[in-house]
Structures are given as structure tokens and as C-alpha cells.
Picture 1 (cartoon, rainbow, N blue to C red):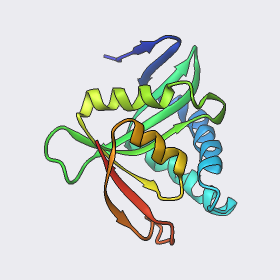
Picture 2 (spheres, rainbow, N blue to C red):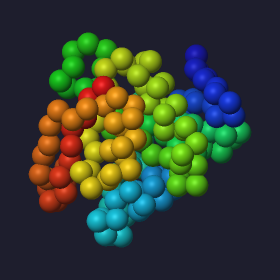
Picture 3 (tube, one colour):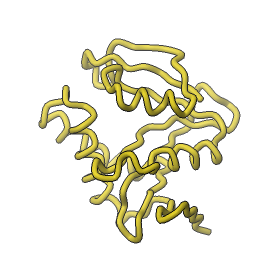
Length: 159
């Protein structure tokens, strides 16, 4: 059974295969804005992974206005949490839709499903760090290199 959640004019629903290109576009535009330290070729490489690995394999919830996707959250099993918990593998909202409560709605939905949430955020992404702090996340760790071994420090946050 498909679960739908509506707040004002935003509906949340599970990922469907037909969402891939729209979510890839949102991912790219939001990443270019939030992660200016990545080169275009690095983003090209990551975008292939988003389309072919991350979207199909994660638990994805899509935020829509009407039929138009505006953002999404990807949840992964949290290896450090045996209880009902998840790692937010990614939260992306289309730049033109940011500041409208979509990210907050997606995180709130994930929290209702999983109760315990963790994530990593780039240290230099001050907007995301502020967003997560306002939601109650706090830092529990830091690592100097990202998953690709690049020298972009990541902060581990939990809620």
C-alpha cells in the first residue's frame, strides 16, 4: 500500500522509478549550490551514482507540489543503531523551493518512520548545518575526508 502524507500543498510519497530524472536534476542543482567545492566532473561522477545506485537502493521519500517533485530524502539503515533508526543518506530540495518547509517536512516524516536519525554534512555547508541544528540535531563526530577520500571534512549529526 502506498502511503501519502499531505501538508498544505506538499505531498510526500515513496520513490517511483519514473522519478529518477527529476530527482537527479534536483540533486544536481542543490549540490551545485550547497557544495561549490566540487568540480563539475566530480558532480558528473556522483550524479551517475545517484541515478543508478543511491536512488534505487535507498528508501526514498519524494516531496511534490501537485505532480512536480520539489525535493527528496534518502534513508539508509544505520549500522550503529540496532533499534528503529536510519541514516539520512541525502536530503535535497530544489533551490527555488528552499525555505518553504519542504526539508523540515521530509525530516519530520523520516523521524516518524525511524525515530532515531543520523547523517553527515559537509563542514563548510553552513546553511545545512544551521537547518539541522534548528531541527535539534547535534554533532557527535567529525572526519577529515569524505567517502571519496577528498579533503572535505564531514560532521556526524544525530537526532
